[in-house]
Length: 212
Length: 215
Image (cartoon, rainbow over all chains, first blue to last red; front, top):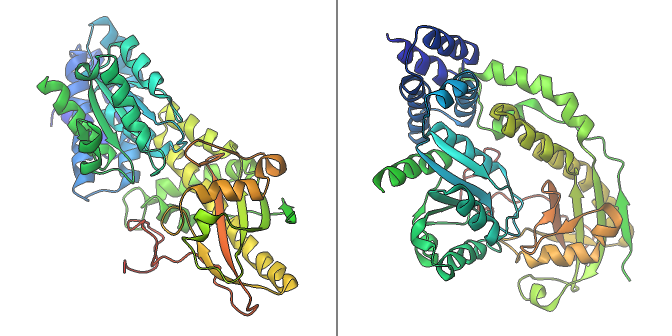
C-alpha cells in the first residue's frame, strides 16, 4: 500500500495521530504537497463522504475522519502555500436572514473543506448583501445558503433576486439546502442546485466548479 | 393581564446513551468507545455552561392562530424554555477549530439539556393546571401543528425578552438557538393531560429518538 493510500485509510478511520505522522513522513520524503493533499487527505474524505451517502457509515464516523483530515492539513498547509496550490474552488456559506440554525451549515463547511474548497463562512442570520459582498470580495465560485424554517426559506430567493438586480446571477453557482428545502423549491427560486445533505453538497459543488 | 411565571430551579441532567443515539452513534460503531470518551470529557463543561430558564403564561390566542387549533375555552398555556447561548457558542467554537466530533456532541448535549428541562417542567405544569382547575387538551408544535408566528405570540405573552432575555428573529425563531417553545391547548376537564410530544405527527422522520413509525 502506498503512503497516500495508507493516509487515506487512516483518515477514514479517524486516526488523526497516524494521519499527521504519515503527512509528516511524506513531506520529509519530498513528496509533492499537492499529491499528499489530493491522493491522501481529500481522497480519504471523498471516500468517507461516499460511504455516508450509501449509509455504510454514520455522521460520527464522518466527523472523526474530517477531524483527522484537519490534523493532517495543519502540517500540510504551509507546504501547500509554498508551492502555490490553488483550491478546487471558493464558496461563501451561510444561514439566511432570520434563521439561527448552524449545525447543518457547519457540516456543509466541513465537507466542502474535505472536497478541497476554500470556505468563507458568514455565519447565521446573514443578510442577502452579506452573501453577495463576501462573494464579490473573495471572487467566489459558489454561494451556499442554508435555511431550516419555512419562514426563512424565502430569504434564499431574496439573495438570488439581489444577484439578478446587480447583474451578478451568472457569475455564481447558487446552492441551497436545509430541512424544508427541496428540488422544486430550488427550481422555483432560481437556484442552481439543491442537495439533501452535506456530503452530496460537497460532491455537487466540486463537480459544478470543475464543469465550469 | 395574564400571570407570568419564571422558573430557573432546574437540575439539568444528561443520559449518555440518548446523546450518542441522537448523533447516530450506536454500540456497533467502530468508534463507539472513542465517542463515549469524548462525551465523558465534555459532560461537566456542558452542564456548567447550561443556564436553564423557563417562562410560562396563560393567554387568549390571536385570531389567525385560533383558526388553526381546536380550543375549548380560547386559551393556551405558553412555555418557553432555554439553556442560554453558552452551549451553542461552545459547539461553534469546536467546529471552527476543526474538532467536529466535539462540536456535534456539544450540540446534541445542548438539545439533551433542553429535553431534560422539559421533563422537569411537565410535572410542574400538571400541578399548576390542577391549581387552576384546568387540563391540557393538546400539545401544539410549530411549524407542523401551528404556524411559526405562534412563537411570536408565545414570546409576547410570556414577555420572554424582559423575563428571561430571549429575543426573536424576523423568521420567528427564538434566540438563543437552544430555546424551545411549547404551546398547550387548555381543557376544561382537569383530568385530561396530553402534554407529551407526539412522534406520530412529527415530520422529523429520521429522528433517532422517534419512538413510532410514520403514520
